[in-house]
Structures are given as C-alpha cells and as structure tokens.
Amino acid sequence: MNTFLEVNNLCKTFSRFHLDDISFSLPQGYIMGFIGPNGSGKTTTIKLILNMLRRDSGEIHVMGRDAVSDEKEIKQDLGVVFDTHFFCEEWNAREVEKAVGGFYRNWDSTQYNRLLSRFHLPKDKKVKALSRGMQMKLMLACALSHDAKLLILDEPTSGLDPIARDELLTILADYISDGKHSVLFSTHITSDLEKIADYITFIQNGKMIYSGSKDELIDDFRRVIGGPKEITSLQKEKIIDLRESSTGFEGLIKTSDAQDFQNLQLEPVTIDAIMVAVNKGGAEDE
Image 1 (cartoon, rainbow, N blue to C red):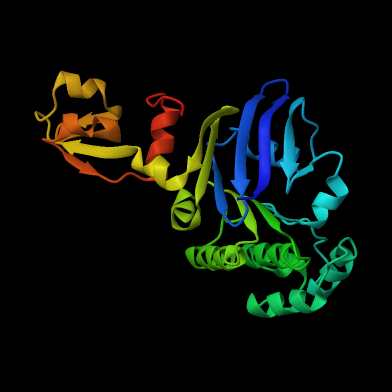
Image 2 (cartoon, rainbow, N blue to C red):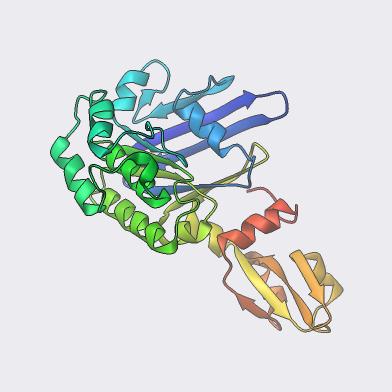
C-alpha cells in the first residue's frame, strides 16, 4: 500500500501555541478525516504540509517526496480547498481559469468546463455574487482540473447547507473510487466523516490523540444509559464524561469494559461524543 502523505514528529512553536510531535500517514486511495477542537492545530498542520509555514522540526513527505526540497513538483499533484476562496471578487469562472490554469502543466480546460457544468456554476457570474456553496465548488473545480493526486480540504463545508455538503461527499467518493487518489479532510462536521472517511487523525491542543481506522476509533467506545439508581460506584469510576440527572445518567465507556455494564443499556457512539469526552479529559490519549 502506497503512502500518499506521511507526517513524522512535526513540531511548530508560536508565542502561545505549540504543535507537538504530530505524526500520521494517509495511504493511497483513502479519505482521512482530520479533527480537533478550534485552536487544536489542524490548520497549522495543513499550512506546514503546504509550506505556508516553516516547521521547527519533523518531516513531511507527499507521495514519497520531501515537502520542502520537492515543493514545486509536489504542488503540481496537490489540490487544495480552504474555508474561504482565494479568487479576486471581480473574476468570473472564465477569468479564474485564466489566472489559475497557467500554474499547472497538466491543466485540463475540458475537465474544468465539465466540472463547471456538473456543479451548475455559471461562467459569467462574478465570484462575489456566488453563494458560499458555489464558491466552494469553484475552488473544487480548480483543484480537480489539473490531475491532482492528493486533495487537501480545510473546513470546506463550514456554512454549507446539508444538500451542498452531501454533493461534496459524493464528489469525494467519486474522486477516490479508482484507488489512485487520496483526501485529507479537515472539518468540524464529524457526521460527514462518519459517512465517507476511512481513517481519522484527532489532535487537541497541538498534541496527538488518535490516528488510525475510523471504525476502530468508534468501536473502541460505547454510550451507556441508565436510571438514577441503576449505577454502582465502581461503574461510575469507569464512565467517561458521566452526566447525571434526576431521571438517570449517561456517559461513555471503553468497549473493553462493556462486560461490567451488562445490566445497562449500551449504544453505538459518534465521533462527536468521543471528541467531547476527550476534551473534558475523561479519556486517555490513544
């Protein structure tokens, strides 16, 4: 299995923030969700991958090439979509192609126009007149029109309605369907990742929490629910993010402890619930 993105022991220090020893790898043909609370270091990590910031230490390899010494070659094979567009507000889609296409030796005008049609993007409408969803699709059309092998998305779905988000997920699924492309997808909307991600990398306060299979992360926890008098003191000690009320309680447990909760209701857990529990300090770092 080829590794399309490999980050090893990545560190970057600012005056009030330290990205500390971040490591993860994304195989060819898969989607990795990149998650963490605001300020956790996701955008910093992405900017380091793209050489928009200079790292203090660590290594980054993209498709087997060094992210610094081979930057120009690597960026020919990268497609990037941020949470805000980088186009001139007065441009239309035709002018965007003129400005962006010249940077890529594999720019495919036919593909670009095909994507404009698929995304129902008007060619003559100015960028500033496009909706948030249409601006995202225009960025995506550019990212997918020069044979990019790796797509990096930094919060592209923030502010999008459910229909636009679902369209994006369909596009991403099609993009990796041939097994030759990969996606690093940073987002706060973890329900989207539950639908399409194969791997999850979770960072918090600049530190690694988890990197691995999405299914293994979710399967490692269970939600436990019970009435006000159904829980013992020993059980309480094993519950993560315990919430009690007059009508009962709920919380998360490690699946490995499930045998100690056979008298209670156990349910599958979401990535959101895991993030909240870890953020409150109730779960050990993976």
